[in-house]
Every structure is written in structure tokens, then in C-alpha cells.
Figure 1 (cartoon, each protein chain N blue to C red):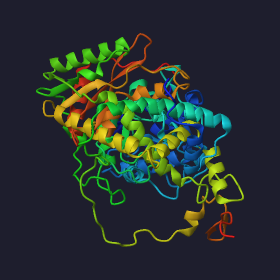
Figure 2: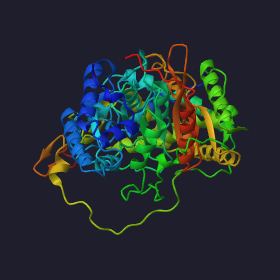
Figure 3: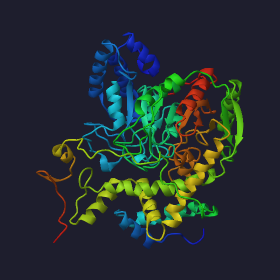
Figure 4: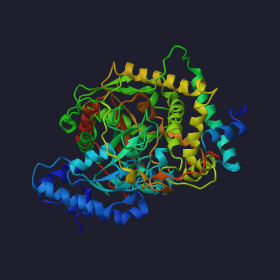
Length: 98
Length: 486
């Protein structure tokens, strides 16, 4: 295989962006898997797309509009029922600001 | 002698329910008994809803007795565990949502409830719908009812297996790159991925939002048409959802395939395909000719680039969609002193290997310096693939291809190398990139008695055409369906 498309340093940087904690073994496996995929997707470089518009959506054109009206009543208890940690009507999180 | 009402089709059961020849409770009971008898082996369900299902069946019986009940009233269905179901846990086959109980219903669940459908349980899947074998489930793989040493396909493997094994009469799946059609093919049932925007995605856990689409599994084309009619239609809660009127799909099933021009793309009959798959599809095409359809040689020249484009677009969208699983408002939280470490450890423990792999690839494809070379390039190639289909449909009404290059593979056969697994979607992925409707119907068996599926692809919103063609083929009787071994 040619020079790897991705280094361990890059894997660690992307993992931080993605908020994923990887073990050293996972980092190495991830580097190998990502390198394989990046090699594979390189085949797209064969295609000249200089004058091709990108497709982001394949649905029907236009954005439907609606009146800004409340359709669902407040349901704090239902919203908080799945909270991993709560205090009364609040989600509890670690302290962020010193 | 058990009554085995669970073996009925939806059309048959609906007729007998209306005659009050059988009750929804008896029908549901037979499905639940079947689940109790075999699902420990099959693992098609993550959660079985005995009590709720029987209550829904009793309510359906009341409605049926009063007359004027909708088509799906009293019909037991399996629901992929990706749909929000109020009060019933929705795991997406992930540890991160293992105990998540949604406070609301997905739009399609609401519609099925309004019709009086019965939900027997939530079906197994690849975690976050990422996979082609259901081996990526945090709850263990679903096995193929035709051969328990083989996969059911994925990601909607639980739904496909449950319908094939008569644990329910129909089921819901989702399809982002083949996740309805491939498992339907592997398990020998009918599966439809409708046109993108035909069905609301509200309340469906998002994987790749520009590709995800909701669809049914069933034992016949007619049954699939009946379910699709209830699912489809505009929804103000999904801004991508089409406002087009929903046809009565079952009424389109005339049994007539005369005059249909069927495109056969040369790029879909390739080296390395299992010979029996090609033989079955060629034979099915001959059947179509004897029904009065004509075959047209077509080319979809960018087919070979579809998987590469898909794994850039889909993973990029996934990396954004899955950012919401942060351990704050719902789902798993793995404690830590500071918030970044909390996110990292929660996601490390909550996600499986394939989900992490796709989040990483997608994050990379979107990251500074790589966006143009990867994500944008993928989107441009998506345009080329879409254009291929547009040109092809100038010459034909629908396209027929195999669903997958092989029949169901062995458990563990493709788990070591992710790319090998990705390649099993080579014939289905382009359809999602182009937003087209695609259907899988069983057309044969290989030497190991494993089902072979045929894919019918149409232009946007041509569901009636592909359903009509599939139904005409099915009714012509070239396939003698074989019951699964389990």
C-alpha cells in the first residue's frame, strides 16, 4: 500500500472533534480502517467534477412555510423523564464555568 | 393442531377479520406464541410487547365489530427499533439508548395506531441502522430463518426475519443504503424503499437524513402496498415530506405487465456475482417478457462509484446527527468531572465499533482542509449518479436488477473487514443517492435453499408502477415460495 492517508495524530484530532475517547488499540485499528476507506474513495478522483453541481437533497424543491404557532403544550416531566441526572426541573451537568 | 393464523397474509387476515371469522386477539395471540416459541433462537425482537399488543387487538376487535375499520385494523406488525414509540423503549440497538423511553410517537406509528394496527414488538437492527447484517446490534445478531448459521441481512434484519418466520404479518424498516431491500432479499420477503420524501421521517432516529427513508416489509407485494398507503403522505413535522396525494397502491395492482419497458443495466451483472443470483434474475426477466413486457439494454455508467460517494455523504451526515448523544438529556451517561470528558466517555461506552468508525470517517470528511476533497466530491458524484438514472428513465419505465450480489452470507464472514461488508450494498446504494423508489421481491432460491431477491427501481413517485410490475410477476406464479426451516 502507498503511504497511509491518515496518521495516528490525525486520528486523535478527529476523535477529539467527534468527542470520542479511543483506547490505543482502537486508535490503531481506526487508523487502519480509515486509511483503507480513504484509499477506496480515492477512486472518485478519476471523475472530472469541475462543472458538476453538488447534490445535498433529492426531495422536492422549496421550503414549506407554516405559521409560528405552538402545537405542543409544555411537558417538562415527560422531557425530563429520560434524564440521566436531574434536579427538580433541571438537567444536571458537571460544572462548566469556574 | 395450532391455528397458525400468523401464517396468513395481511390481505387474507383482513378479509377474515371483517367476516368475524377470526378475531384480532386470536391472530395476535398466534403471532405472540410464535415469537415465544422461536425468537430465543432467531433474535428478531429486542422488545416484545405482549400486554400492549393484546390490548390493541381487543380495541381493534371492537372497531371491526362496529364495521368500517381501516385496512390495517387488527393486523399484527413488527416495528424496527428505530421508531419512537410512546411509552415503549426505543434502543436503536445501541447501549447509548438502551433505556430510552420516548414520550412521543413517530408520525408513521401515529398513523398505524389510528388505523388500529397491533404492534407485537420492536425489532432488532444494526446499531443506528449502520450495517448490512444486523451483526452490529448491541443485543446480538438476528439469524436468518432459512439457515440459522447465516445473517438475516441488515440493517432492518429483525423486521425481515420476523416477517419471514411468521412472527408478525408485516413490519416497518428503514432504508439508507439498502437496509430494507437487502434483508428482504436474504430472508425471502417483499420490502419497499419508497421515493425519498414519500413518507415522513419524524420520530425516526436519524442516520443520514438526505438518504433515510421509511418502508414496509410484507409477505406479498399486495400486503406491502396496503401498508405503504397508510405510511405515506404529507407531515408538517418533516419539512422534506412531499405534499403529493397518496394513491391507493393496492388498486394499482391490475396483474398486468403488458407494454412495460424494463431497463436492464449492464453494470449490474458483474464479475464475482453468485451465478445462481444472475440466473434467477435472468429467468425472472424472461417471465416478464412472457407477460408482455419488453427489455431494454441500459447503462448506469457511474454505478462503480456509488459506494465511495455514499460512504462520504452518509458518514458526514451521521457524524452530525449522532452528535446529539452526549449523555445530557437522555440516554447513557458515563460520569466524569468535566463536560468534555463526560461526552467522550459516554460516547466511548455507548457506541459500538461500526458507529464509531462512521462517525470518525464522517467527521474527517467534513473537517477543515478535507471538506472539498471528500464531502463535496461525494455530493458531486451523487449528482452524476442521479443523472445516470434520469437518462435511463427516458428509455424505460422501470429498472430490474439483483438486490445483492450473493444470497445470505455466514455470520462473521464479513465482520473482519468493513469495506467487504459495505460492498454487499453495491446494487442498492445508488437508489438512495438518487432518491428513487426501489422494491425487493423474492424470485428464486440457490442450491442451499437461500432466497434470491429481485430489485425493481422506478423514477421518483412511481411506486404504483413498480408495485404493479412486482405483483404481476408474483401472480404469474413462477416462484413456489418455500417456508423457512425454523
